[in-house]
Amino acid sequence: MKNTKIVIHGKKKLCGSVKISGAKNAALPQLAASLLTTSEVHFQSVPQVEDVKVMFHALKNLGAEGIFDADTVYIQVPELKSTEIPPEIGKTSRASILILGPLVARNGYAKVSRPGGCPIGDRKIDFHLQGLGQMGVTIQETPDYIIAKADNGLHAIDYTFPNKTVTGTENLLMAAALAQGKTILRNCALEPEVGDLIDLLTTMGSHIQGKNTETLTIAGQNRLNGARHTLIPDRIEMGTYVIAASLKGNNEIMIENAIPEYIDGLLSVLTQIGIEVAAWDGKITVRTRGPLCPVEIETLPYPGYPTDLQAQLTTLLTQAQGVSKIKENIFNNRFQHADELNKLGANIEVDRDIAIIRGKTPLNGRTIRATDLRASAALVLAGLIADGQTVVENAYQLLRGYENMPQKLRQLGADITLIDE
Ligand code: EPZ
Image (cartoon, rainbow, N blue to C red):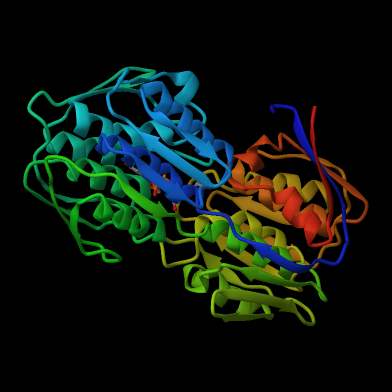
């Protein structure tokens, strides 16, 4: 898996329809939520991607029973066999930090490795720990682990997040579900994956008010029930295919099972660039007519322009006629794809949190290297329009978060092959 690479022969027309998989960033917290009950939880539309497989494996390591077959997960944790997530499991993704809250809420003890995840900047967790601390959890930190104890269980708090945090909101939401009393969380993240977690917890018997607002009120329960739940589609995958369709004139892609409003931030930018986007009853079609216009954008928490679609947009803007500017506000090291795109012939200058993209630059295929999940998608998109052959090394990064992307692009007409040496 570690020597995986993707080989692309560019400039092929893309047309046809693509089905969006379930959301990776909904699956991760929701699988962890299965710790909040001893009953079975049944998930549909779970993407077969590496980060979700790591989460499933981590839960099995704790004593979960179940199966992950196609897009279905049955999982049940009747009793814990371990309360520890070792670094070899926790170091590659955000799984361990999402397990911390529900595990300590259920059991009063959790020892989890410091979380990994994309090397896109500081991946701080101080808000997670601050909130759990106020709920009665004693936190001890070592270089490799976070050890959480709550001998008297968790109690309700009124907590305001200093800044928006997606998994921080999800972690404290899950912990509050089993805390004594009514918890109020303020300045919560508004990402759709938070709302989907609220839907799951409600089905499990939680009483949560304020979905899709910044203030959530959670009435803690002594225990939660099992549930059946279908995950929302992956809005970042959706946006990635919309950008893929936008790269070249005469591409025509239909995106099925879409929820267009989840990517309003992207669609409004594409309209400014001159891309024709039509969205109706769960479908999106994208057509590019004429030259692309440059834009100036900044990444923001939902519903603003998503940081997880910043790298992919950078690739598109190499084809705009003029100077574009992207300000990355969420992470402080999320332009690593720029150097790789410049190797193909792009003209991108990065100065701290700003990238200046000068287009239109023809791209010529060569061997480049993926540094993180969304950067790998940006490099694949560049390969689709580059002249000749592009080889993306370290393509394991892509498999962490995109289900069957080479297959889906091949079905649309791309000449793309995954090679797992
Ligand atoms: C989630 O990461 C997503 N991952 C990320 O997607 C996404 O980029 C990010 O939210 C922002 O939308 C999952 O949901 C599994 P944050 P998360 O906590 O929760 C700072 C992908 O490509 N912060 O919202 O880890 C932090 O340093 C991934 O699918 C604190 O300072 O991000 C960052 O600068 C990449 N203290 C900013 O907030 C904290 O306690 C946003 O982080 C927590 C966060």
